[in-house]
Image 1 (tube, rainbow, N blue to C red):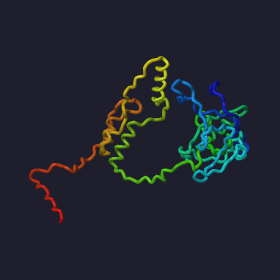
Image 2: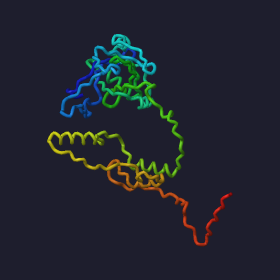
Image 3: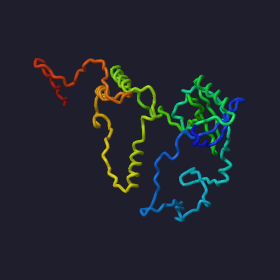
Image 4: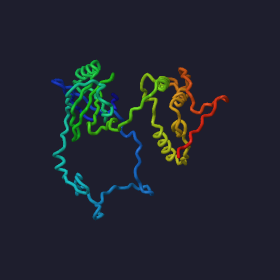
Length: 302
């Protein structure tokens, strides 16, 4: 852990009679997003104000209360003191309640991530817990009262140490089953081509350095040009739309075309894919031989 990285808090992982002193770090960089301030056209900053909808007067923050809408335009009111009494008290203890298989938690439940490092006199129990999780293939589920809220959290281990993952509650996560997606059968030839396409651009692992925020880079470059007093020129960018320009094309044709165009995941260059020849399909509008009579049209019933 870099010495310039500051911990958010000192906490304790607790399970059974074992306590692991840890330091909590954010897993993401703060301030990574580009943020613009709202200004007047003369460059002056703008100030946000709350206005009473009925009287149109500005309401000072000291005069504000919070309300929960129970029906249309009907509220129950809470004072700051009443809400303070309902808040969950923050705790420095992350209470582990069970150990579950690592793959049993759907990533849909993942919320904010934190890094955990051993605190003073916590190196040995920290290393022991991390190794036990790695060898068992399990992760810990824990309750964590933090900043006036109650969280459920996952503690998992990678090769470098422990990660604390806030989890969403079941009521916060939607299910694909609720979308009632129809079951559609796929043929073996279609699946064969799809698998070849997957294999052609497959990679051994995820490399985060392979991807970067192109939009952010464009905005930062534009800001730099503004600072230098240069004029910003809008350049046309290639639109990556669906194959066929919006036309409905045959799935097998699309798979064959993709196999020919897909770059190799390892080299980034085009490679030739070995495609097993498929039996020729009978075209609906096949040409008839001269000796074959044209079918008679059925007369419409009156």
